[in-house]
Length: 602
Image (cartoon, rainbow, N blue to C red; front, side, top):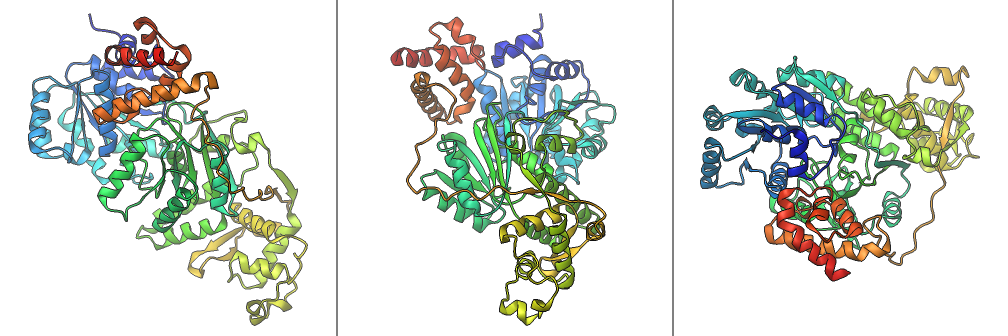
């Protein structure tokens, strides 16, 4: 008799129950139905096609955009005893021939391919010769030209429906708002597919956004507060900043490595492998890094510069906490970020429609940054998901920001921008407001303006907060053609005329500079001290096994499995099999080795 999805979940993957809509999706695809699946990172998307692949006749063909992603998936599947392989540019011709032969003879359950290779005549001819169980199109948002990760080769995937009309297709993504979902369905010919939306919430991630003061020192305080010894990603906008920040963190005893497109391919591969295979590595990177990294135990993602959109922010922060354990998304942002990103938009080769869309996306992210209410509610609302109660796990929920009646201050700021000719950036306008009679101010004779000195009672840092929030609220805009000069918008008229009140958030006072002695390394788990030593020994065992096999440690066991192992200390095969993530093959391969470590530590 054919096993049930539940039996495959338990026997192969070692889990006792499905999450969310997994079971409904799997049953739909097993029954030959097409599906569009939107599920947050870490929600278990892969099982939605891997289990149907094991229940349907033939080989499942998985379209995956990145080599690192397909290699990780295949390593993990082979550890679970699943017959999986990939076709990509890292293979020799002899290896390609062997995998093709396995596909033809029915010796494979899943075959991962890049879209470029899939569309080649050799691969299409191979697929004509084999029985195909299903097509899974991973990272399906890459098909959307309005998304954040457009891959033009994905547009050709509609050929699959035309060439193999009876084969079910499932497209999967974590980041598709309603317009992107419509475009995916249209471009892939999935108009009749059933759509499964599992929600966008990642409740284990704590969101924190702070105004930039000294961003590196702010980052250091964040890391010292609980992330020393943890794996994490720090995103920067420029290659130079990546290099400088990585060097700065290394000087402070972090295992920090840079990653950007200006490095050689060998250097990038070396640093990515260190992040994937070693514990506690911090990668400092441009957004070129991250997609396709399946590492589950990333405990934080930090942004030292503003991303381009809420979609990008969600995608990048979603690389933290894929194992569902607590994780942090931390970001420092300032008005200079807005200037830089607007300049990048205006200087791009995109058409005007695309530029306007990107500016709107940036404005939406600014709104998220300056919220005084729950960030998660607004983040989810952007993707069309309503949350009625505050989340309790973002900075605004944990420590609600103070607000102040800032109508008069806003009127002064707007008036000063207008009277100085809407030709200057925030720093210069603040000097005029505070009555700083610099040579430059006197040179433009702005010391004679009625707005000169009218804001002397407000600190420069508070004024910077005011200008940042006025831009975020659309009362001013940054003119990138004018080198970051501020200009009033039509919406500012109501404030200038006193027709509405304006309440702004009061930025928290700057924290004291951290002391220079090295803080103790934080424990990488929430285990109590009575279990921590055993967990460390189990992790050392896992590391040696992974090194001997040339695979990442987490494809052997996730940290959550090792934590359960340290707490429960199984001494029999039956109790070991009850641990999460222990299927039949892993029980056979690893139970004796890990139970020996447990016995030695007793």
